[in-house]
Length: 319
Image (cartoon, rainbow, N blue to C red; front, side, top):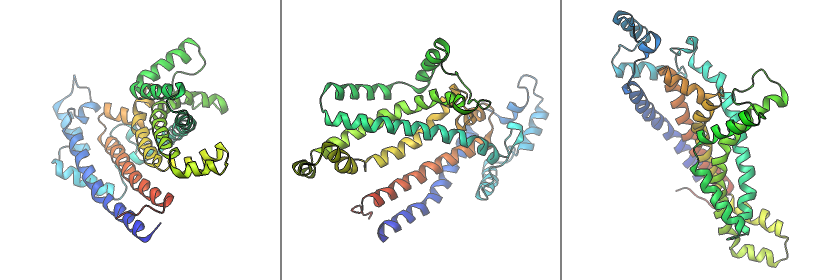
């Protein structure tokens, strides 16, 4: 990477700090302005004594003005202290996230790997057989994969493979199972997450390959007598894969947000189900930590994609 590109990446990293500060202000304000009171989530709403509710709010620090609450919370976050959860047995938020992050990362890695394993060969073959029946079927399948909601596909798979056929468990991560039996619990969540991701990647692989295989250097490689496999994978795919870096980066961020629905449907004990449970319980510290960490992950991912562009193609120079 050139000195100019390194300087550009460092500037992008520096500007992540004010962007995260702005994100934290917006998220903090939106969560506290949303309907619902965390104090009422901790006591019975039907028989809640106003005195008890006021005492709970004071114990949680919710009786302070909103700017004061934000200043206290931001000072703790600056020290990487996300506070203590209102519920979840009053665990520290960072410990609560640490217990769940591994399950989400496993789900993301497997689904992204499956999506790439499907998208690359299908997209390459569709580009090489342009306007054939396979190409048209691939395009139709891509649109179908983008149109179907994750939760609907998840419910269909549960009905088919868990209820009707009994081949796979319907939910939970199988923490009590071992070996291959435990892997059975991850099959349906991974497939549901990989399905729309593969649909997006197939379209980009196909369009990138179509643009590359019509270039003059590909025709020259064929004229030299190189095998079709060598031309496709050594020359065409090497150059067509560069635009995929951005797509893979955006899809990785999508997997993190899309796993909320999938993890809830399959009772997968990851960050998605934790976010859903914390919203239902109005647990502000957990919601704020998850939102801020997810935003930081997406922002850092964008900088990483730009850096990978410069590393993979030395011709790219950021101004």
